Length: 124
Image 1 (cartoon, rainbow, N blue to C red):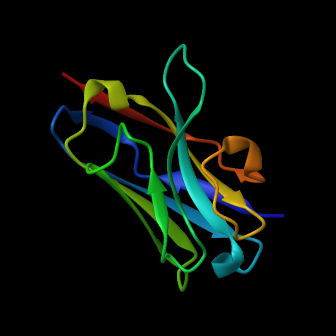
Image 2: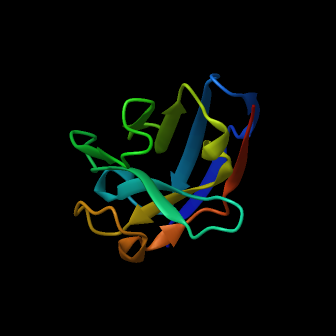
């Protein structure tokens, strides 16, 4: 079993930056494929970014490409989402997720473990 705990959310003005962190435990962290997904009010949960176990490869949704960066520190069992040039439409609950197999995906159905989520609010 893998436990994931997000932190770093909050309220920020449009154009600002925020860094989300996700602490993982329960399995060898470098064997886990990790990702961030989000759910805006009244909308379905959607892919934001994912990263392979080594951190060598990452993928991004078009809506965040160039503004968000996913990274990980396997020595600390952490994955991060650096968010810049935030927009009101980035307002959502952000979820950290892990896949037991280190196989690249952008689909939430492929993720095996989920954090409880953390709220990010971007005001205009």
